[in-house]
Image (cartoon, rainbow, N blue to C red):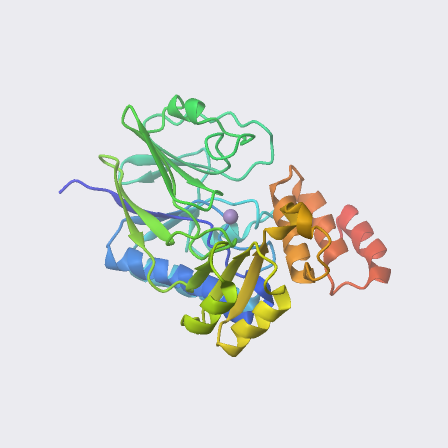
Length: 348
Ligand SMILES: [Mn+2]
């Protein structure tokens, strides 16, 4: 049997304390461990990670512990972990992936191809450039973490160009929904995130299973991710919250009518045992209720919105670090000046 089976995953975002909840932080690490177990059960030759293993460049000890646990499990099962660096975790200098590589737990893929049972695997860390020229990777696999023009009009990587770079298989991260393209025997795919990172990631989370010898692709849905319960705009959210089983679920309400306030829905969700209630307020687009006084944005959302927007900007790792210092609530305002100065002088 001549096969080289790999599990393609990415956008794990370990360390993301979504909605300010400890449970959600744990969920992201658990999803990684579920993927690891799946790789072991499927007896793949390697796990290929397409970036954003971590939510940011400073994962906590608990998150590193879970990550190392997964990496050791793979190593004990003789499954290689091959990865690249995504926009969320990118650091100046040594990357987390380099640290894992130095412990012989991972391989940081580069343009010097890694040989996986005779197949060259190329990797490209996230780049903030507006246009990316795919490298030549003859007859092999290219792994990168970028947005394709096919999924985002101003995406930095052209699908057409990818088809001509020489790679037979292109494994992508960054876009959080699973996508598959096939042209002239060339496979291009996003695996999607492993926990719902944004509210609109409604579909089941999954990973790709690919036989690199013949480009045959399959996927496995993750079974243990946090359940999300969606209430559509045309449904009565109060009625749904009162009658449905929302225990331990994240409830997402698409709110169009003014029948209930955001805080009323949150309170009702809490009473019904939901882990969290998140309201996607669609009312602001409606001119009649433009001045609705109870339309509110909570602070957590705002912080998250800024992080999401900045993560996509073409900022250097240095600029991103500066931004984090400025927005880090643990650093008092009076210390920002000295912290940024230290950063610029390379003392940080
Ligand atoms: Mn991501």
